[in-house]
Length: 209
Image 1 (tube, rainbow, N blue to C red):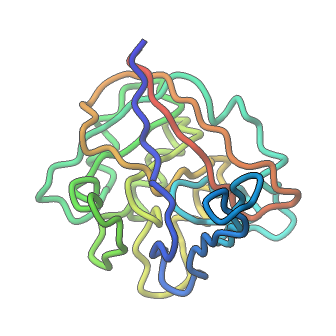
Image 2: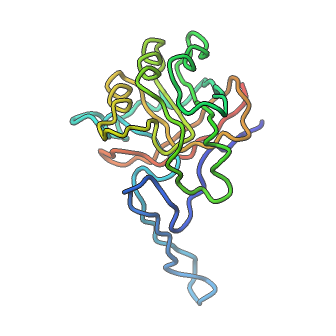
């Protein structure tokens, strides 16, 4: 069985979304220094690398990451390629999503830019309001994209997050799809079980359907 890991590699001082605390991965004990075992300290944002946004991230009183239905995060998924010339994922892009799709991952030019350094770039491709509305109208309940935010919002009000989460869709951000062809897959996605967490770093893996 072929499994495709679409997760960010996590490393010390890894760059995240602007304003988020940086990753710190520090050695605490090392066998090479006489300890009985290796042990490290890890400090990072709840939205580090590949992660799931639960309702609580933007909706007061919404479910935390430990309260989301794992069935929504695991199962059949569609990878939809977005032309490299596109600067936004819009309703016209969503029109290419097959009817009946409940989970969709958008592969944009972002994926080609992540390796090998995996550093944030501000001119990433994200969804606009029309895409969010079209996805919810189609019954999509999990939306993934290869950027650290599902949207680019200069106003700071994050309308796409509010619309998707408020409409019952979960968000998977920070995936890497550069070598993944369009098509049907099975998604395995398990976020950390953080009590009342506003986000959940996760390992995400695709298996061709």
